[in-house]
Every structure is written in C-alpha cells, then in structure tokens.
Image (tube, rainbow, N blue to C red; front, side, top):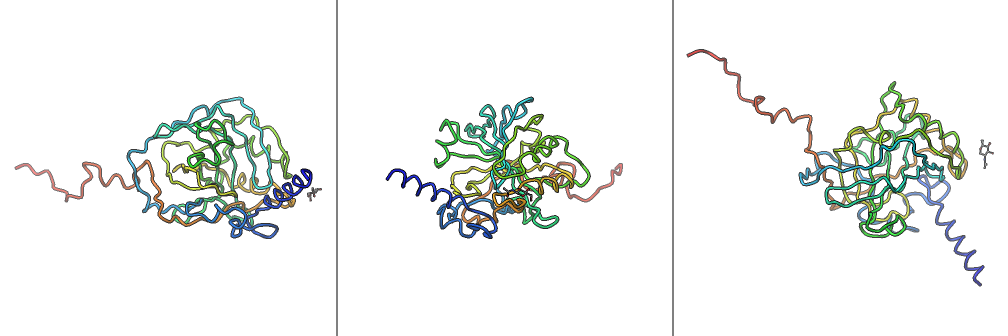
Length: 300
Ligand SMILES: *[C@@H]1O[C@H](CO)[C@@H](O)[C@H](O)[C@H]1NC(C)=O
C-alpha cells in the first residue's frame, strides 16, 4: 500500500511539474491556476510599472547589501529546465529600511529570444519589456531557512534587475557566467561558476528601487514576495544577449526561449519608490533656475 501511495504521489508530482509558458507541451500560463490556485490570485507578479502612478515614499531608505561583492567564491549553477539558476551562499543578505533582513538563496534569469530580437524581462516599465530580467531570491531571516520561509506571508523578497542591450559594450563581468552556460546546455546539468562577483552581475546603482507586494512569477505563484526592482539596469552587448538566449535547452531538449510570464493586474496595490519621480526634471525646481523673466542688471 505504501509503495502504491509513493508511486501515485510521484506521478502527481511529475504531472504538477509540467508547467510551461507556451502551453504547447504542458500546462500553459493561463492554466497554471488549475493546478496552482495562487496563480489566479490578486497580488500576482510580474506587473507593468507605470512611472506616473508610482508613489514616492520618502520613509523608504536604502537597501544595505552585505557580502555580494565577495571574491573567489564558487557557485553551483544548474539548468533546471526552466532557467539557469545560481545557488547563492547564506553569507549574502540585505537589510531593508524596516530593518528586516533577507538572506540570499538563489539567482535566476528570464529571457526572450523566441524570434530574433524578442525581449524577455518579466516586469515592464511604462509598457517597455527589456531583454533579460535577473531575480535574486531571498528569504526572511526570521524563518531561518528558505523551506521554512517559503509559505510564510512575509517569507520572501526578490531583488530584481532589468538588462538592457548596449550594442557594442561587452560586459566582462558576465564573461565567466556566459562561458559556463555551454556546460549546462541540457536540462538537469550542473556546473560550478568561478571568477564571478555577484555584486558585479547587479546594476551599478543599487540605492534606488521600486517596491511592491507580489508573488513568485512561476508556479506555485505564492503571494508572499516583497519585490525590489532596481531603477538602474545591467547592460550587456547584443552578442552577449544573443549568446545567453541560445545556450540552454528545456526538458523537451528544445532551446529555452521566452521564459517569462505575462504581466498581471496591479489591482488595488500601489508601487512605491524610494526616489522621487522624474529626477531628470529636478533642475526645474532648483533655486536660480526659476521661471521668472530675465531682468537685466541695470545700475540705477
Ligand atoms: C538533445 O539534442 C541534441 C542535439 O540535437 C542531441 O545530441 C541529444 O542527444 C539530445 N538529448 C536528448 C536527451 O534527447
């Protein structure tokens, strides 16, 4: 009897695992909620951020990132059939402006490439989808481990960054990572990533961010993620992005393309930022640049 239960539950697990984006060969994203009810919830991710509707919250401070810049670490890196995932050490953590500490668990990517030039970020800003999106998944330190935190209402936080193409500017911080992809071409393969500093894979400016309450962007879509999306982006050359997009195969042995979820309704949620809107227009407010007409300095 126990053997039968095990067999049945294994089958159940393997059926559940067959989620996809396209739905060609499994549960497409519009059907995720039939197996994973949270995917049909009201605080799902990703979302489209409308800059004009983002609320500047001056009480949101900076994030303090610790130990992401450590040199000479080795990171296990896996092709799990959906993405390439880098295991991060628990020595990396960040502190938000409430003093909550989130410990690093793993980092993975979403990209496009389905047809030439198709972008694959999950979050969009004013409707614009960027080439790639980076997600560094963290758990709330008060739960001690990812497994304990993953179902808690305040269990998870993701540091997210968008990757833009800067056509001829090769980002050498990504060289080892991109070279290593050839060793995990097939689903289930793993390797060790060397010569990579995680901080250098993130945007240069990690002080300014958007934040909102959302979910995991893949099944089970758990609605317990505090999102921090950096305002600054990572830049890769076009050649690097094309290489990234064509390196990895999924569990059907097809090149893994367009692994991103559609944006979800924002609903009643408000996206906040720790920086004021339109800083590029700030000069309008500076003293000495007022709109008063020019008055010549005529001696009286
Ligand atoms: C996947 O495809 C490659 C290239 O077409 C082939 O060499 C390899 O045997 C395939 N692997 C599996 C598991 O089907």
